[in-house]
Length: 268
Image (cartoon, rainbow, N blue to C red; front, side, top):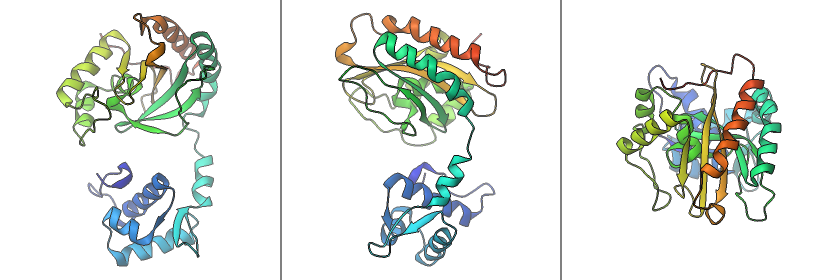
């Protein structure tokens, strides 16, 4: 894997295009980078890096500050991003049910989609409690460590789930993080059968999550819905205390979702 979670060129990929996209990923992840930082971080040849960066600046994908000599994401990237509508309909449909669920259970509700081995948060309804999860739309977390990530992985065929779990080293975030692919496959298989997944302080000490599969359109849009709460507010009946309401909210969203998205994989 290269910086920014991209895959090195191969299998017919065009090397220069792959490098340009890797540069964009790296700058987006870090906020800004100098030329030497990009070359060192990505292992790029200096001569081709100069040409690629100049092209990205000329086309508006990157901006270069003449004083600091730091590259940042350019206006073109924002413009193209505005044209993306892949999950817009789902978010519009889901948000009212998410807001109602957050009010009812008093905790943060999140909607995420699967991208490789990461869950990407596409909608959030925050808890009204003073102490709550701090999260943002667009944030990414590795799926093996989160409840919503396991609910997403559970919608993949078992062999594809196993392939992704073995596609890169899995980091440990807390003493509770499971990183062994075989153990994770068993955990995901259990989630697939029972219809929900959880994490108990696996990505953040003091934070728990329960999640259910939501939709799979058959074309890569795999989503899940979760409730996340501080461990201090999770009593002995967690996650059952909120699971029924979470499942009901997911059912409401599915019922309102267009047929093209309303295909949740279920185990036999």
